[in-house]
Image (cartoon, rainbow, N blue to C red; front, side, top):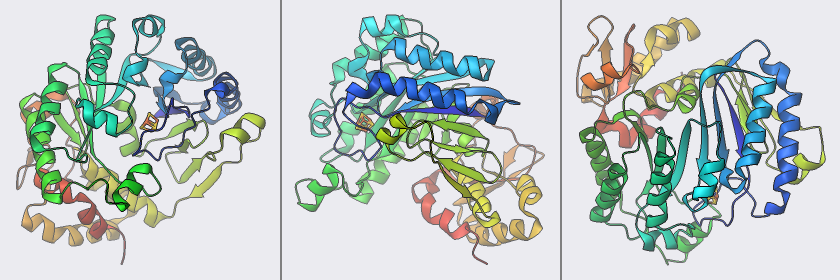
Length: 400
Ligand code: SF4
């Protein structure tokens, strides 16, 4: 068992770019905590023989619950599952909720993820975020003073009107806070969101591709200069601070998901998704999850996509063990043009070095960080190819 994901579907108000499942009706929060604990208890047999290594409370906005409610959820998990000593236990918080009083009440978490997005007050206001840059800084500093030293912050780049200089200021502000982990995503215009409508009406303009590429390049460069490992396309961490929970998703290990809209995976073939329907979740003990049995071709595609997203790449020996020599040969055939062009690289299993091209794995720091293990040949994206990773992954999918 890799982990447990718990979804908290409440937000104080909706940010204009977001299409995550959440509601602003916070009057349901206490009933929700009880329903969540009911699901957590009811499904205890699904992990009776495994130890839980990571717990992640995400949303929505978990900090719309009180510290006591979060604690109650954690205690429910601990009393129904075998949680490993030293498990990574993360909660997502929004900066405006992180008051000194809130921090004092927060117990049981050893990792915090803060949704900061940008330090530019005008852009925060455009996005309808509820904090400003000063509040974000105070939140980080308050958590640090309280002894939380595994803090991740989220940033978004390619925001409407954001210049390269403003993005560089965001990066400087982020690294000046001495956090251990950074996730940075290009803004996406999700259909049906207010932001998507503003673009359709010509009221905001999408960042040009060249600008987004340059922003990503600067992000990678600054993170490297600050000693961060680029361990996944959008994720950077000081050595030893990679997110264990998210890494287990990319490694294809099992996890349980609780709450409406939460997903789970048994580590073999079966995916499960709870319906995104808070009212029926609260009113019925019977959750009718959507169960999906993955075909071998789908499992192969996931292994390729998830492998290429990370510094570990695709372990070719493991791929052959799972899917047979035919699929490994197919992968190498499809990868050949990209190996030649330097977009992909193949590591030498014995020398722990890369055969061609600079890669996100080519730093001694990474080897020392303990995250990177090379016992078999691995296929990886080079850093210059990360911005076009989607098209490369699509070409490696199983289409004989
Ligand atoms: S971005 Fe976060 S806080 Fe904003 S609406 Fe989405 S889930 Fe809620």
